[in-house]
Length: 401
Image (cartoon, rainbow, N blue to C red; front, top):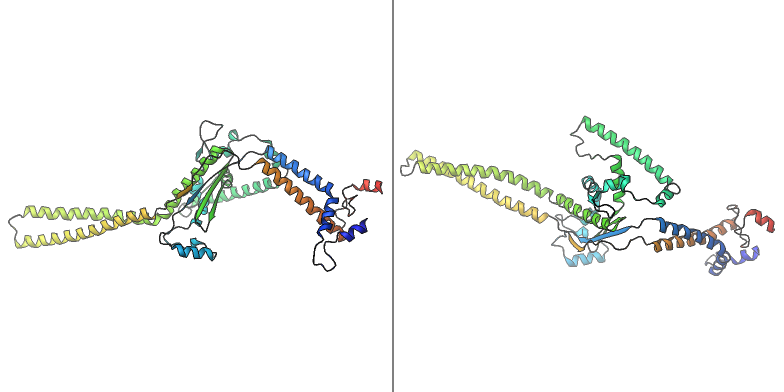
């Protein structure tokens, strides 16, 4: 029987140019019991995972950031045909949408998001995300996380602990340096160990997808509750709008602040020169001597210079204010945020995925074990090219022999 199998189950023909599909199908049919057992085990695991895991709700919104107004449509079409991103054709005055995902690494934004209050269905009062993920009173009880943590997840737990220890040491070094020299590390942000872990959890629930050809951005947030998912999405969108606005108009705002400072000085000087000329004219009305005329010409020249300077700085102030408004980015919402009705992690989908994964692994293991055995490998010892004894233990094989 083994000789017949070896003759029919050669993966390659004598010329090595094709695969004997029928022989492989026949072999898989002969090993159907093994495949069914492995697939059934994965199906049971998938069923437990689907039943015990928490539902996850996903809320998203699609928006378009400010684009360059002078961009040519034909040029964009040619760039798209050439496989180029139209973002590369943006003018220097416009922020590229590629910067939006980087906002999720902004420490100030993350800190503000960390202490944002979100409404949850189980509690009447809103709860900050930091309290929700660190306070045991707000944690939902589920047996599946404990099963996963103390079985397959223990390497991840160990790695997380080691990273937390390293992060704590690093933060202590930063704190000690900041005590010695506050000016040199004024831009360094400090997070506690709980804040650091909570930020990692929050970031894993937020994603931004970019359509480089059309310029659309999709912000997605997932949470254990439908209302919390929608509120988190809205909060992240508002914070991104806030920080991108600050970042975009920072230079224009600094210019405006400088112009406003100079405007107040020039305006005050102009008023002084104007009042001095008016007082001199009132005091010397009708009796203007040569000395008084010279003094009046001097005051008039100073007044004209002050007026010219004040007129120029007024124009610059108006231009700076217009530049701030012009540079302010506009996020046009294409798809608004909606409270989801159904969880995004379908239980049926989980069951199907685990079942398909088990079937693929079972089929792959049959082909792989057969290949190893045909190459003369002794591992696995319980595997046999004889399909009748392939999945029998060694003692039963001896009894049958």
